[in-house]
Image (tube, rainbow, N blue to C red; front, side, top):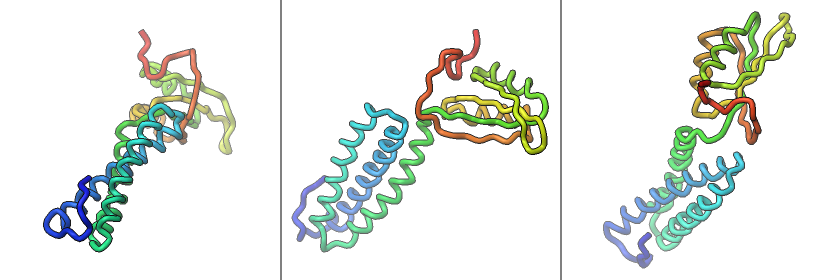
Length: 185
């Protein structure tokens, strides 16, 4: 960031500094969102460098706000950057789709077609006989990478449109029966 005396006026002081503060806040808040996501997924080696970058950008942004206390535009830019940064950070997190999910599907009747389709698509499947309030059901557990969520939901809807399913984040799992999302050879 540029270090200008607080009393300086002109284009840079009136529009340039608030714009730079706005961009800096988008960057640091977006990075912070990703950092928190990585921490919650146990990816400390990615979270630590992001924390350094996030705090460095924040210090640069807040220093410009403090040097331009007499200019309300820097306050607005700081707050707008925070809001937009949250949105951008969530978009980035969705696009990266880091981590794994467990999908629990409950379906009545025979679930052989559904489990077969999931298996053939490369997903590990565990099917359990259970009893629901309306009678016998099948509970199907599938652990998938987050980026494959829509594919699995599509298979569930195609083979069991009335199924009930829940989705939860998985922080850690250890599996040896089948590699995640790998087609059988």
